[in-house]
Length: 123
Ligand SMILES: [Cu+2]
Image (cartoon, rainbow, N blue to C red):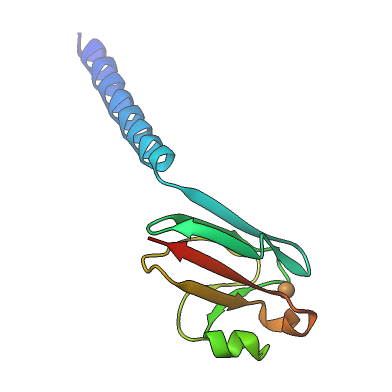
């Protein structure tokens, strides 16, 4: 009898865990997820159009990073962070952009190869 109760409890816990997982998946399905990768000495895509609240997944290979910079820094092929988002070498990271504006970012070691990109966030 005790054993049956234990089995029953385990089944309840498993079904609770499963329903939580399912809810998480539903939330992910509803939000817009866009991915930026570093397949070579460039970002792909290097120009991304997104909507407010979208999740952007940066997936960097080990020799590249992605550091948000000001428009001026971007134009001048400089690398100084504006203290915005930053994705480390080899890191995969989700960022959520909550302002309708143009975000600029560079790969610090490869800026002279023009490795940089923009994200245009629309309302
Ligand atoms: Cu790079």
